[in-house]
Amino acid sequence: MEIVIRKKLQTMREVSKRAEKLKNFVNKGHFQDPMYGECSLWEDRSNRSRLVCLEKRFSDQESLLKELEVKKKRLIDSNEFILSLVDYSVEVVSALCATSYILRLFFETEEKTLHQDITERRNSHPSRFYSMGQLTQLMYNQVFANEFLEMKKFFHGDICPQNIAITKKGEFKLAWKSDDRGSERIQMEKALRKSPLFVSPQQYHNMINRPQNRINFDRNKADVFSLGLTILQAGLLKSIDKIYEPTAFNEKTLSIFLKEFQDRYADNPLLCATVEAMLNVPEANRNSFIMIKSAQPDYKEVMDYIDQLERGLINPDYEDLDYQVDLEKLKDIQITNPKTNMIPSQPQSQVSKKIPQDRPLPVNSPQPQQNYCNSQQNFYSNSAQNQPLPQNLTRRFTEF
Image (tube, rainbow, N blue to C red; front, side, top):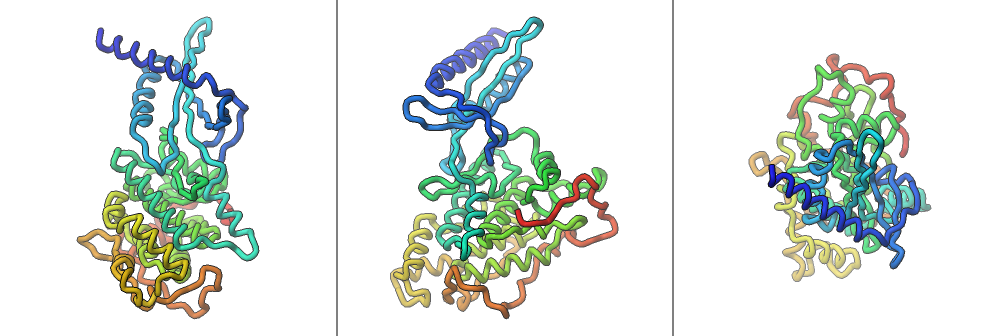
């Protein structure tokens, strides 16, 4: 008992010190942040740096201390591609009959989200498509961020363009507030708001079916699928919401989107193979973020190579011997479960053919590859056992 009391006092003293550290910050008022939702904006008087603040209320000290233990670990152990929990403070609210506690969580923030950037690029004339380098950086940054979460036994539950920030350096950082509502509730709330979905077929199956027909799924592998959809939408600069029909997940539409993406970014087989493996492999065989990261070539080498390629300093037909090894890395990489080997290598002709980022896609493009999702239980087809979508979840499948 004495040890528990001592631990409580130590934690509360730490909270008191943290409140002292934040005394230079002033509350600039409440607003609706695109990543964090309802929050307040706090500004440092000395250097005008800004943080967003989320509030959580607790009616008892035990629940507060339990939450603080989790947040302390996150302060110590962070990742460069996840928006940081910068600080926290606690306010004690005393009333006549009870005492409550307000925990304020201060998060790093950025001015623009990937969702906002996609919208701006799509609405410009002509549309400003992302370069190979930009999309590859998005892929690497987010694989690194989510591999970190997976290593810590966490999952995100809501990976989408709205929850990815773009820094002034052009890096892509994941907004993660370690929401305790669970991914199912988050996605149902998004559906009710008619927000675009970025969920796996298994998640969508559970959303449109009654509780007795719902299935178990791997939350980390669902996050892999969500990241694949996020990269796909960024590459195409258009809504992909048509894959979610009222009573089923539409695999044919997904295959069309994938083929369009592969045609546009054919010079980067690493990017195409990774997105293909995220979206076109059944969950049981889909690689986790840990496996995807372990299979990727060195980040700096790949980005240096793509930079040289995009500036025309490398011959895409393999004539520059200095970069031949790097090109082979990109051409031959396969992001698969070693036991299944389900993703074919990109053909050399597809790799070496340069497609400018702003040219129209070819009209007579080849048919999409076989969709490997069919080898699992079919969550996509309009089968008799699928229950109709509840009336209050009927969604408009329009451009976001």
